[in-house]
Image 1 (cartoon, helix red, strand yellow):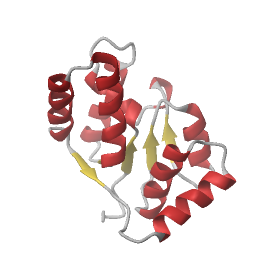
Image 2 (cartoon, helix red, strand yellow):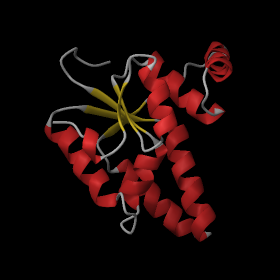
Image 3 (cartoon, one colour):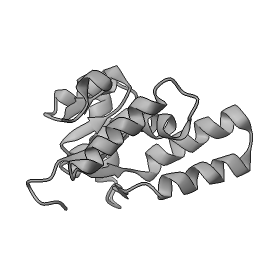
Length: 150
């Protein structure tokens, strides 16, 4: 997937949401952090699942289908590659095992399993619980501006 020297970073749904929401307190911090990753040559990843979660939240708040489409277009303009599960039921069993053995929700376990399966180095999330859990699998975390990439 990547050369060993490049850092790989998974963007959680909340990062995508803060990137899109210019009124959010975390917007500027998120844009700055994403730019630092890009400038450092890091490869950015997310998934259709994280994008759907982001769009679901925006639609639930606005009930505006046009806004959801515009948000999806802005995400598609981001320099990210999407990672997805394999087509077997084994993926489901693996993330359900994570659900049984960790203290995070089912959706987060799905994302965590994608990160593990794709050998991604870092998760960028504002979800402290997910970030802490990721570190137990040797995945670094970026959770706020004090932990931005250098």
